[in-house]
Length: 299
Image (cartoon, rainbow, N blue to C red; front, side, top):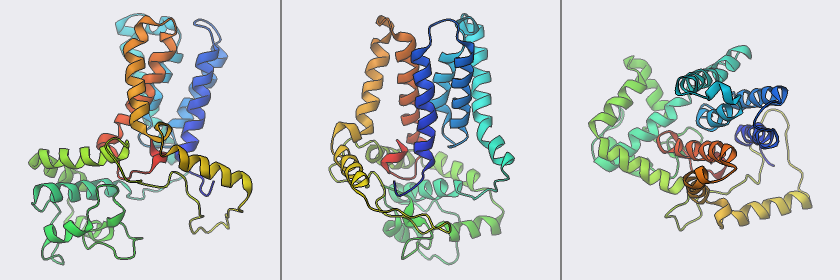
């Protein structure tokens, strides 16, 4: 691979935890269950949106007696969600990570979408931009937020750096402003989100959206490089081929998960089918409100 990406890293411990769930019997094997739960918590430290993928697997790995009644199941659900949600901030604190402000990318992307579909300026007031609606018309791309970033050749005047300065100077919370824009223009927000989600899950899409894997090394300070070789060439070809088949269409896998969830109550393997289907489906649906790019690695 040309990149070391946390998306694939998160998938690895979840896959291992799923394998343990499949391998262990309904009762017993406490050590195996603990190992699988640790793997799930480790996965939760890698992405802010890991909760929907992790929680169904974690609940399924608990002893049956812990979720035998509605009260116990509800308690397990709340405690499990709290532990998984706390994993990332605790890990960040443990390693001394500093906030990067990356959450502003979602705010800007949504403000751009609301402005584009409503025809009304949803951005905070910026004296340096005379006609935000016209400027945004050239900046907004439903596939991804990158046109508002600082690394593009021609940065948008409503982009990350500009909006970061505006919010800091005004003292207004970006998230409060975002919420106000969503409430003021709910239809435009829904149009923007559904348009992006449609592209993201490769539903009614005819053009290739994004290369499924990176073929070149991004600039880095660690001297990491990729040496071309036959194995990588064939892996790359396989990945690009899969992007044009149902294997590379998230909507196909989400539809499969829905189908499995519907028929699961009649299957002897329902204890496995339900959590695995829910894990994939809920994680995919989580990108409806919280995605900023349509790269296949996210889903």
